[in-house]
Image (cartoon, rainbow, N blue to C red; front, top):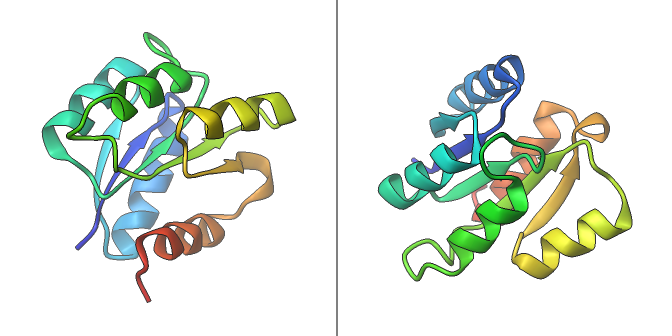
Length: 123
């Protein structure tokens, strides 16, 4: 069973994502700020991280930088799930090592799960 870490400061959205992922047979972890996200990622080594950019304590860009510079977490795919949709935001995140980028308003939960399965090569 693939393990997904959801780093999202909107607690209602985090709970919704986690519940939906559990129904899709994923093991899930949640963090509501960037620092806790980094700690959980290093401790639990999830198969994929769903990451917001605008977060307390450390933003998503800082989380990506720290995880990508650590050999133990550098290969974990990171999917940004955010409301920031400008080209500059996308480019910065991808240059730092994010796998892909989804704008929250543009995606349904089913599509987020489909993207996760595609990245993890799950049928």
